[in-house]
Each structure stands twice: as structure tokens, then as C-alpha cells.
Image 1 (cartoon, rainbow, N blue to C red):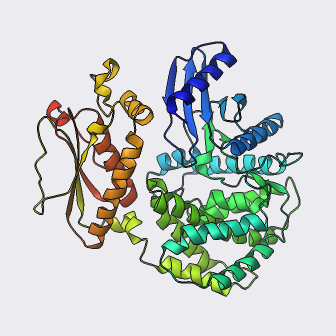
Image 2: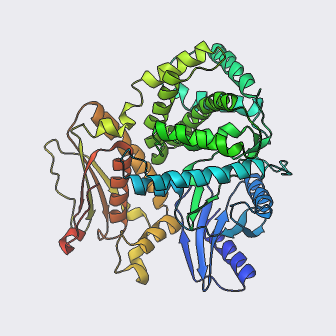
Image 3: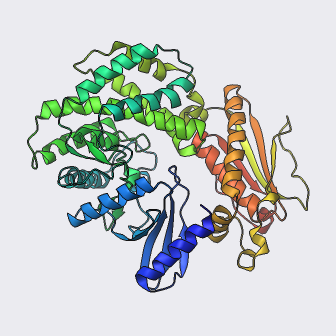
Length: 487
């Protein structure tokens, strides 16, 4: 749906609910699901406006939210909705458990006690939503399925096969793989599966409000086993929780859940690692679809970490069932060279330096500094220029209002997605061949808005995805004493 139509409808909902006009709207980055979120403010009010094109997902989320809220669980309150497409929900702030993890650890392996406490609080709230939230819950709105059953599990295998395994260039016997997977499924379904299963329970979906965890994005929820969501949380690739902490948090979950229901500790742990395996398989499928095919950087960056988790499982876990072909195929996957370019730890030791520049076409092309010459030059002048509008004339591509304008009122998101896809191929090739330099240039009319934001976005993308050395230069703006922080 057109961006202006979405904002217009959400603005009307805001006015209808609060009897006030919206004073400011802040667009959130696009999500992998295609849902759009906006922070909408007026005097004394701040809410999140949401639009989702999938009506069934919205119906599930709103229905589950109302049920959980009535039980006093930590989820956002749904204020008003329209046509199962638009709704306003409680604003839970900006910080997720994932953000807190990255902030406190800063790429260090240590796991602070304060962060561990937050994970334990999250586990306590997870248990409540799984057990208390599951009682009396109407699962009929669940989408696309009301239970994590045979159908859902085999769907995950196919998702993994077609979006990841087939892209790995590993040959495999589909029938043997399917037979072993069926053995795994029958084993997993032999435990209790009558609880609410969040489906994508990870630290990015845990908001921290006044140091209390609140849950979002459970529109894929359904009935299932307790172990799946816990495995999703503890083995989230980007969270990179040390194994010793994972073991401690598993023990904490078991002792906490025993205050609510009776469980056999040893049996629970056994099934936990079975559900962890199917979660790791599903996650790799998601990384393949969103990363390898749709070129979304976050998911590509996660591939080496996802394979690292799978490698740990293969080396340390043995289930009480026989699935030799499945295990051998997964082992080959962890050994392939196919995904090595996405490992930032490897890329950081390569000689490649990517020079990224913004420039003004009025002044001509920037000088090429590398000995081999060449590189990419992208023309941003086909994107609507914020500089044509008075509020942005004195601002640059580093000012948030300009970035919001480009992201919501122009085709900049599509433009940068395609340019990143082109440059990615060159970076991967250059890393493989140990080349030393690559240049990427973005030009616009004045070298102030579009080209600046494009160059900064590309620098962040390549740094986060590959860990390569970045040499960032803004030709026009640096004459005004800009200082570029290293990526």
C-alpha cells in the first residue's frame, strides 16, 4: 500500500482515539515481514501505529494480545484497529533485550550479571505467557497454523531444504533426509505440546520498559511444546550467549517452571536439545530466504553464527533416536566453504579496503585513488531531492528528518537494496581473490543529501556484513570540517 495512504489512515485512527491531531510521526525501518511501524505523538500521548498487509497475521496478533492483556501479561495494549490492516498499540519504547546485550558486551565474551538478571526476568515472563497465557486461549485465529505439529515441522524442513540447503551446493538424497526428519518429528511430538508457543522468541522481540520485559511480534504463535521458545531465546545467533550461560539459564528455566507444573528435569533437557535442532534448521532456512535470496544484511550476517550453533550441537548432543543421514548432511553443511565470505572474523584478516565516497556531479567525478582504477559509480539524482524542500535545505544526509524523507517518500530503500546487492558480489569475489581495493561512489546534484546518506548506508552495510576495512569520504561535506567515524 502507498506510504501516504498508510500514514493518512493511521493519523485518522489516532485522531479518533485521542481526539487530538498527530504532532509528529517517526517511521521505523522496514521489517523483514513487510509490516510498517510508526511512532506517533501529540501532547501527552505516544503510540505505535502499525500496518500489516496480511490480515490473518494481524487478526492473530490482536486476538492474542487482548487475551494476554486480560491475564495481566507483559504485552502491548491494542488501542484501536481498522479493517484488520491498521492498528494503534502501546508504545513500549526503543530498547530491546538485544540492544541491551550489544550495549553491555560491546563484542566482549563476558556476560555481565545485570544482563543475566534481565534474561532471567524474561524467562519468568516467558513461562507465564506459555502456561497462563495458553489457558483458555482461542487458537482459531492462529496463522498459518494453530499448532506446531507434524505439518508445521515438515514445513520447516522444506523451508530449510529449498532456501538454504539447496543453495549450499551440497548434494543429498531427499528421501533419506525426509525419512530421518520424520523420525525426529515423531520423537519431538512424544512430549507434552499443549502450551502457547511464541514461535519466534528472541531478544529482538523483547522490549525493556522500566527494566521489565514486554513481548511483541507473536503473530505466528500457536500451540506447542515449552522447549521450543526457550531454545529460540538461548541460541539466538546474534545474541551469541556463552555456552556456560546458556546452561545456567536452562537450569533456571527448569527450576522456575517446576513452580508452575510438574516436569521431569532429565526428560525436559533431552527434549530441549531435540527442539533446539529443529529450531536451528528453521533459522537457517530463514537466513537463506531473507539473506541469500532477498539480500537483507542482518540475516546474511547471522549465517556464520547459525552454522556455529549447529556445529556445537553436532559435536555435543546425541538424541535417543537414530537419524544418521540427517546428521551427516548437517555436518557437511558446517564444513562447506560456501558461506565463508560472510564470516566477519575471516574478512577482517583480508587486505581488502573499500573506499566509499559521496560527491557532487556539479564538480565532476571524484579522483580514483587505487592503482587498479575503476569501481562503482551510482547516480542518486533519480531519487526525489530533499533539498528542494525548505525544511531540509540546510540539512544533510546525516540528519534524521532527511533520512526519514528518503526512506518514506522516495524509492531510496529499493535503490540502496539493489546497489548493495551489486557491490556484495564484488566484495565476495575480491575477498576470495585477496584483492586490496574497491571503490564505490555515490553522486547527486550537490553532494549533500542523497549521496551522503547512500554512502553512509553502504559503509555500514559492508562493515556489518563482511567486517571489511572501510575508507569513507564525503567530498563536498568534508570541506566543511566533517569528521568521519571509522566503520
